[in-house]
Each structure stands twice: as structure tokens, then as C-alpha cells.
Image (cartoon, rainbow, N blue to C red):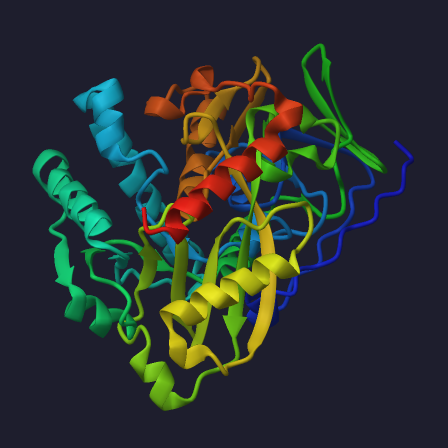
Length: 435
């Protein structure tokens, strides 16, 4: 209880450099009482706090560092109604009813972001829903993308997509390398750290206590509830929510959840501001973009800067080799950027699960959790906060495949890092030879 906690350094990201000023929250000292103690002040935890407080209950939020220090402040700010597991795959494995329920959940998640931005007045989040283009790098992947889009329209009643030929994708992106693509409406972009700080400000304005630099080092049961202990204090509550995702191993109190997750480092770079003529040429519609390679890259234009990101940054710290690989891939798509300096480089952890979907529910009668967003968490984590509030109220929301009882531990957990490197290396090889 007396161990000194030293907050980890902030991230040198574009979002950190352009965000609204960070609000200081106190460090927990002494004892607090609450209906629910929430561990983690990211999107999941703050959305849960918002919805719990709106229900008339009293939450307290504990954050090991500062709100937004983890994935909520490091991601690419892309809003999508999807899971890493496709709806077609869900249909084949689990049936049409489950596929439709998962489709509903996915679209509910993007609507939740819009609802929270509107309700809490987070104008600096700069939320836009202009759609996303999946750009194909060869005819095989283009055909697969078109087949998937047509299936979604036919079987899920998805909003009409636009099939783009090579010229259409060139007009969208300014790049010559893609053979075509698919434009999906409804997706969008956001300033992820401003969104996070807006959520925190909104929760705090409701009178919900948020404590920073207050890691939960122990969770223990008492006769009538649960106690979350920090180095300098404790919160006694009836229920606890663990909302730590890929950063669950920061303390021993939540580390057991890490055995269900494979942390995968995602890296991003952002250029200096582009000259007006070049900024107008690249991604002029303001959409978000992905490519169809296995080691998928994504890109978007923000404030006349190209942001370019992707998987494959290994290790626990930022990697210059990963940033160099990103820059090389970026210039391969956009040769006009060859002489444009990078202004920001950063990375963060994505929490992958064995079945490629998040999981939410109860660990026991007093502890709830939601983790494992698989790289599509901005919208989904916002929605899961509202579902956690429903569980707290004693409800049983239909979460489809996200049900915690479906969650599986990672087999041979100590071997996860070399296994990830091996699989990623194989994917990189297949991408390199055009397969």
C-alpha cells in the first residue's frame, strides 16, 4: 500500500501535441465509497462511468497514469462498424441470427460515439463520418472486397456501398498503386485524445471522482462488496469494473486478464504539414483508408498532415525499425511524400483475442470487465461502457459473441510473443510476394 507509483511518460504523438489542455485530477488519498469502482480511465471506463452516473448510481474512476495515457490516446482515431472477424465469417460459423446481432452491435457502436460527442458537447473531437475506402493492391483482393461488400448488402441489408475502379481510388487517395476498392459509408474519423478528454470532463462535471496516478494494486472481496487498493488509498464499492484492455499487466490486480489477450504493437507516423497543392491532391475527400494486405496499413489526412499506421511493431517499446518500415510503406503508396519530414512517431498496444472479437461480462458476482478490441476499439469500447452500466444495474444485455463466457485463455501464454512474430513475419512475406 505504501509503494511509490511513478507515472509513465506521455506519448510524443500528433494527438498529444494538438489536444485540448489536459485537466489535472487528484491522486487518491484515503478512502472513498462508491456503488462501482472503475479501473481504467480510457474510453471503456469513462463511458461506463457516464452511463452509470446517468442511472443514478455513484462510480469512482481510478487511473494508473493519466486519462488517455493508454490506447485511448494513442490510436489512429478511426471509427468503424466492424470486428476483426467478418460478418460473413460469423454467419458461416454461428448462423444468420448471430451475424445480424453482431452487425447491430457494430453499428450501435459508431452511433454511440456520435451520441456521446453530441451529449457532452465535445466539439474539439472533430468527429466526421465521411466513410472509409478499402483500397485493393491486386485483382484478387479487389474481387474479395467486392464479394464481401455485395454479400453485406444482400444478406445484412447494409447501406449501399460504392465499388471504385482504379481511377476512382486514385481520385480518392491520390495514389496510383491501387487497382480499385470499396467505399463504405458510416465510418469516420475523430481526434482520439480530445474525445477522451471530453469524456473525462463530461464525467467529472457530473460529480464523478476521477483519480489519476492511482493504480489499483490489489482487489479484495469484503462481506458486502469489493475493495480496490491503491498505494495511498482505497475505494470500497459494491461492484468493480476492469477496463484496462492491453495494459492490464500494469499491476497485479488486473494482470490475470492479460492471459486472455495477445498485445500487438501498432505504430503510427504523422508528416509535417503539407503544402496546399499537395494536401489537396492526397485524400481530398477527408475519408479514412485501409489497404487489403494481410499486414494492413491505414491512412488518413488530418490538418494537412498524412497519418499512416499499421501493425508489426514488435517489442514493448517504440521501434525505429517499425517507424522506418512505415515510412517506406507510406512513400511506396504516396511517392510525393518522399521528401516530406515526419513530425511525430508513436505506438501503442492493440489487444487481440483468440476468436478475434472483444469480450464483456462478469468475472464473478462482483467484478465486470470489457477487453480485447482487436484494433477496432474507439467505437466499440465506447459502446461497451454502456453495456457495462447495464450489467451493473442487474440487466442482461444481448452481447452476442462478445459474451465473457466465450472468452478463452491464450494457450502456451509464455510463447505468445515469438508466436506473434512468426505469424506476422509469414504475413509480411506473403504481402511482399503479392499473395
